[in-house]
Image 1 (cartoon, rainbow, N blue to C red):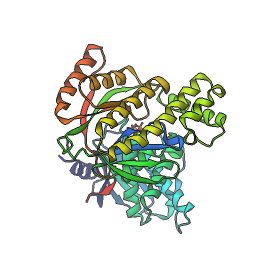
Image 2: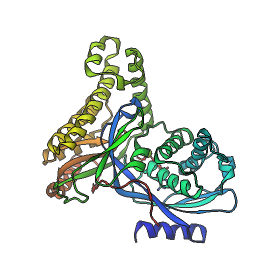
Image 3: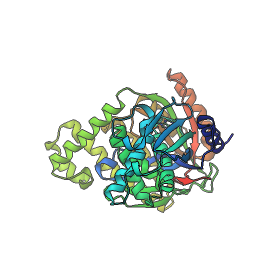
Image 4: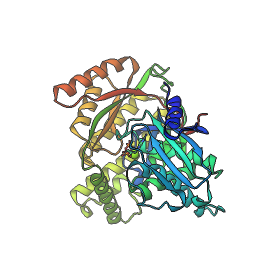
Length: 397
Ligand code: ADP
Ligand code: MG
């Protein structure tokens, strides 16, 4: 069964009638640029083929009902009463989007912007994005619903406004303090390309990945994901601590954000920072530079350089930012040892997934050696699969 028919059938099973239409948004991997987004720097994600589909129908009353395959039933909510903190569990993601669209509409001075003035809706989600694997299932869900409601509610928002709304939902309604990387990738990506995003002003362009659209593309290269299936308890605490370290470093250097610091300036200011904050800042400052270098290398078709920069990024996250794990380090080490051009953990860290850029012909062997190495070290079996650069959120039918 395809994901689209699963979404349609799931909707009918949950609500007893067919959906009006289907929309979807992709998960993503970040090729490079980790923990740079909230430092107003650069990121380079691409959307993957795995998507979350939202099957939706408007209702005549102001109620919202949300349902998802594999998640607990979430009940019903009056649209007019949505407020941060008003929903627990996974339902906070879709309800947050409905709330945030109203907030953005109000900010932009749209008449009748309040969700209370809109029809309610029933929505059912079906997804093949692994949840909690660092591939951004949360933004896939948010952005699938954001494009759906943009159309059903005739909001007329452009993609940048939808990024703003989905980001607001996750930060203010769900309470997860993350940057705009995930929502931008889900909404702005183009097939075959990475999204080069400046997180300071939100401007973006696409950089062709030159991989072809399948694993045996013209470049002969593929991106392998190794999902370690490990998520450590200190994920959110660790994330908040890294953010705080970056803010302290920027304040000590007298800049608005670490985006404004060069490696040379950071080195010159070393004695104004603790040893640990210095290393945290060094990751961010060098990572921004690596993103720019990867974009230049992609534009020059130099995939060997891209791979080298990915591996340098991993070392920086492992040693300076200290957000890697033994499982991620092993995946990277084995992939590079097995002939990948480069590899790195992707996503916020403390678990989740690693990616490797490798000749497509080597991928089956790499999958086997990574699995064997995990077994040997006594780690749980990882999930491995290739991803292709895919299109952003859209209406499917
Ligand atoms: P990631 O975005 O990396 O997958 P997050 O912790 O940011 O991890 O988001 C995962 C959470 O998003 C899940 O715990 C769940 O609450 C919600 N979520 C994501 N996808 C779905 C889905 N298809 N159905 C229900 N909830 C989902
Ligand atoms: Mg997420």
